[in-house]
Length: 225
Ligand code: FPP
Image (cartoon, rainbow, N blue to C red; front, side, top):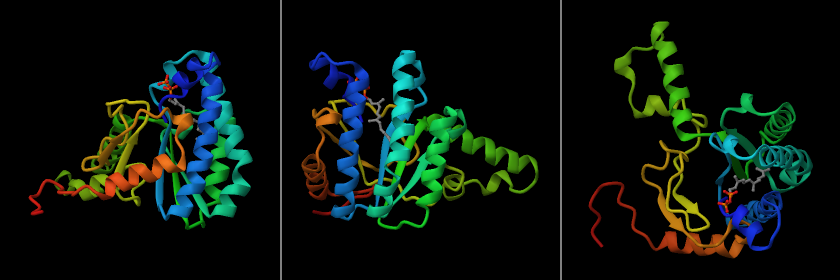
């Protein structure tokens, strides 16, 4: 959800106000996604590198996420949204961790949309966490190194039951992958827009999907037109 800071700077507002408006944009996108028949939406809300931001910005983001998780629970239930979190949850402040855990538990039977919040998430960390768990099992004799293949490795990622994303949207003209879902985006289609995240609307999302639908996916193979 890039561009919150730039959106605020353009208006002479503090960065935290950009994040607050970014959250408002996310609310609309979650609602629109349920209407559009999107089954899984993953959003990068806080990366493992974001701890390096100024202390007051990190605090504002953590408070925003804790408050939002608590406040939005009735809406999540109304729209049939199931919340899951990808990332090192145990590294979050208590209040944010607790509110997110409550949402995950309370919404676990919802089926319309899975909202996967990447929080304290890093793609390399995710791969390291998986490698550690696999190594432990190997040391304890529960699996043999020869059994390790893509299918087995995926089972140790944060969301083993979710399919790889079809479409990766980058806002605010960023042309980097930025440690996001490194394993899962192997064949994702990338769509970049100069729209800053607080200005991202359901119409922007519809445009991204319409462009995606025009593409031919090859997954490394040759496809005749
Ligand atoms: C990146 O923009 C945005 C973030 C680091 C925070 C995104 C988080 C939210 C919108 C809150 C979401 C709320 C919930 C409940 C998950 P940036 O600050 O890097 O912007 P810049 O590139 O313009 O500086």
